[in-house]
Amino acid sequence: MINTASKGEDWDGFMQSVQASNLKDKNAIVNIVNSQSDVNKREQEIRNMTRVFKTLKADILPALRRVNITVNSYQPVKTDEQFLSAATNNPETLNLEELLYSATLTKDANTQLAIYKATLKQNEGDWRAFNNAGEIELKNGNISQAASYLNTANSLSPNNVIVLNNLGAVEAKKGNVKAAIDLFKKAQGLGSNEGYNAGIPQITKAKYNDAVTALNVKKCNHNLGLAQLLAGNSAAAIATLKCAPAAADTYYVLAIAGARTNDTALLYESLMKSIKMDSSYKAKAADDREFIRYFNVPEFQAIVK
Image (cartoon, rainbow, N blue to C red; front, side):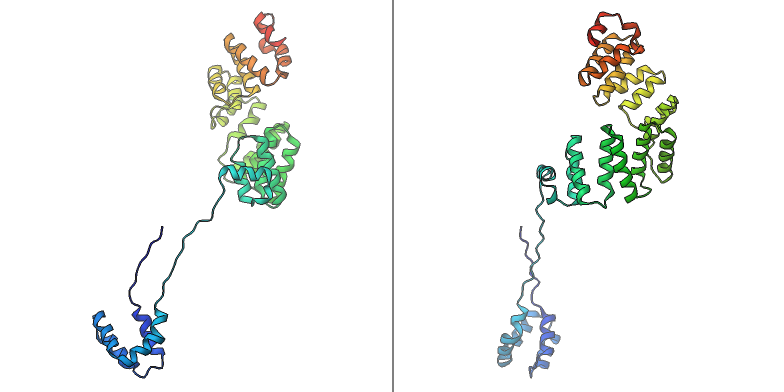
């Protein structure tokens, strides 16, 4: 799209050029311009000064015949598909912000982790890639590696509430309940409104109602369902676990909820899903006293054999 706009004759520029010139009749020209308000008559009177006008035409007017061109342009950007492809195949072609953005374009944790690893190699002074890599390793159960990444993030960005919350989660996974709670409280003292993580150590301390209160800020997740079940609210736990993301441990807890409520259909269906996703739950279920009333039931035996 091209927009044009005419501003007309540049009389101000004309006056400045005339006054700065060596024209003998420049005062006469200035008087015409100042005394004649009608632009057409003004121009005609100057043209009538034949000898002077030839000089004006040759030396003054050409510089005033100009066009100002303004171009508003947009730098071409990559599509999301191109960003993700570059981040996974040629990460060195992207800058820091582009790499961090690319990691949000996939839900695959392994791909995200690979992008964050490439990012932190190219940008060793930015805490975000270390934090995000640590968070993924924490979810993957690689506690030692998660702690390493997060400690680096903490050194790069001290007292960052996001990093402190993640470090608290690491301590909780290690079983260091007091250290975890201290980190969560420190994060909250610095302005974090994230109370979810603080609920996880409460489960370890058998303070189930406190855990439910803290974890309830996020609906439909495994930890809340577990806390609700341990607090004795099986119905709430079942509702929470059914809408939580599919995972072997979530289905296993849902199977326990089925056993506690004598809902055998829920028990068997959930246990089969759990074992299908992680076969180690077969041996676990065979000896779990949560299912003691079903140890000799053929349907249960068929699942755990």
